[in-house]
Image 1: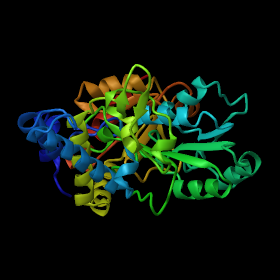
Image 2 (image 1 turned 30 degrees about the vertical axis):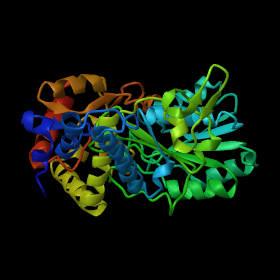
Image 3 (image 1 turned 180 degrees about the vertical axis):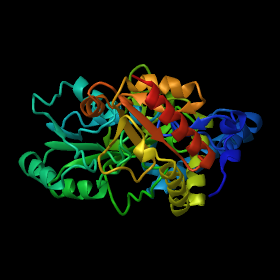
Image 4 (image 1 turned 180 degrees about the horizontal axis):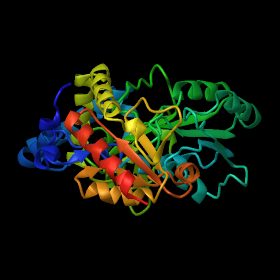
Length: 401
């Protein structure tokens, strides 16, 4: 097992911290910070605004980052639009697909893939928001049930839009998103996939497994916060910009405006240059390390946790029932509230996430209002972290009444 903590400054500067909240935000790799600092220290300037050398360097850096991010999911750079993160991306998709008669989501969605649809006036009771239940045993949806819904609702002309998270931020279970997309396409439904909890752990090839929209965030994959992307297979010229500004126009007068074409039409102002550069570096780093190596490292962490009894802790149950195979472990306390346990752990320098973890409907159902204790690990966790977590968590579960 490799010791990767030296590559993450926050972990180096907090040596006692056992950080198990990577599903909320991963630590930032030093190469990402180096790339961002290089911009601030050597070519801080605006892009596409000046003929002078450092402005040209900044413009090239943005173009390079777009290629690095697109390469991570095997799509063309021109199909990538930078956003403020997955939440913003999902909101933009919801606005573009407001014409859909019915929207299908799963019960296990992050709030950010529920709220935009409800704000549009959709709801489960009205029938224009279909919620696919997940199986409590393994956390997946039933593909046969999906097919029945598609047969009933997907009859062309944007009748049904499918929007799902590939990997649950509650359970860590990855849905068979490729099969869901293929089945949806057979019935003429368009598909959006939230890869936020997937992109740092599994290879994603959207040329081999196409979808109409995909979104994810840099801070879930060792990059900076406040930056993400939206991929679409649609022509950006056919999609309505959400904002307008000088960056998105060819010409402005007091009589009319002529917009740019392609992705430029959707870039109204100064881009978040440093964060975009960091996003690109993080994407390149994942490709360089390789997902087989990442998988093996994460499996080593999981085996250490199992060796210290993470699956047989007192006064809690594991969800889903089948257990866990990915980098997220969710425990439901039998006594007290999950936040009580989180506070006890925080006092011992153990960081986990407790409560409803931004997925209120599913957590409320499975926990009965107690919330969950979510443990999410990454390749930088080591044996010492695992031992400390299990020791302190066992103690906290026994103390709470």
